[in-house]
Image (cartoon, rainbow over all chains, first blue to last red; front, side, top):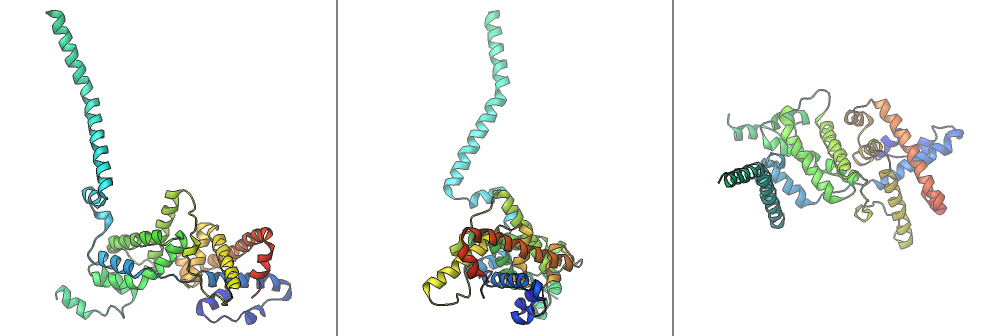
Length: 120
Length: 205
């Protein structure tokens, strides 16, 4: 653990650290410390793109929070092709619902017509 | 005193996180200062948990949106603001992994590998291969172990700070760290059994 702290502080002296362990554990400890050293070298700092950082700062300062947008605003953010697909899908769904809902009415109308025909 | 007057009175750069959080509840400049302090850290964390810049940007944005949206409800109950932010990031990354229901393939060419030890092309290639293998092995670890390694080696946090983020004691973090190293060593050894020449290189300083 001292090794990890030394890595974090940037003052690693592996030999000094290894002297703290007896010879039996030495090889195992050495392997783990070397592995930790490699992890430290491999997990290097990454820098976000300047444009991303600036854009996000601007959005945050303007209070633009995507989760707070209405469904209409979200749809307007979609590309035109997605808006068209959403429109067609929405119209089809609505037509289907209307058709299903109107079935009892149509059936009743057909029934009434057939009764009138029979009566005539 | 009006808003701009208050802002000129406030020393945002010198203020500590707790003070900035209080101000940020009705002062966007204070939140901007918190943003500047943590954007790179959160981005780093998310990047290493997702493995690509595109998702790292998306999730980092969501972390700060959520923080901004909930900062008026944040109260310091022994968990500092930084730990609160990391917890948000952790939850969003966990959801991200769950939504995909799979581990995303790491585009290793995006990783910035530091410390290329020599100019010799073959040595650089070997070093890159080792870094890549190590990254893959880290990404095969359970999420909490990945989180620990990132917080320790990328964010350079102490065990106590990591404990606050992961909601564990300092001792538990030490223990988890030790077990993580052992596990990682085991995973690498399995790989080495397939490519025995790599082991010699990896464990020679």
